[in-house]
Image (cartoon, one colour):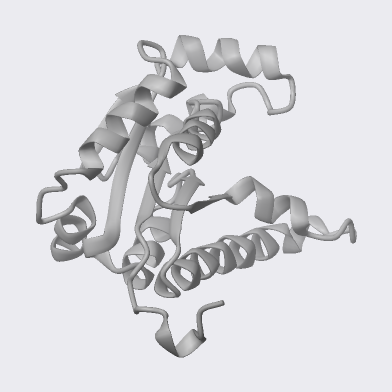
Length: 189
């Protein structure tokens, strides 16, 4: 058993999958978790929402509760990476403040921002098939989710399988260029 004082310091890598609901982020994350060389944690924002108790939240407080959940999620991801863990994040940057918050918390040199794209017709089909999301949710998110326009790597889940997308991302990791998308976005704000 290693002594804690002998564990080398390292900053974990954050592979940040950004796309609308039903775009395929969770499926890509599962594939990445299976093929990455280093151990990693898949942290989907939906898991944080699922951990919340079933206490009734009055409608006038729901926005505040959701905002605190997202802020806590960002800080949990930053903490895991700061402790040296690689993290695959499954998130929807459907509000500008979310991106700004992540930019303020994550080490931008150690973030790979992945654009997960899918055409509106396919998103609508997936929503109908899933049946667990409000119809039109992905379409409402589409404009804002990719509005920042800068990615390290992008994939289209209507043209590539989750496995193919994961392999593309893994291949990209071997030769990450600088500055990263997070570095460029941080400099622009």
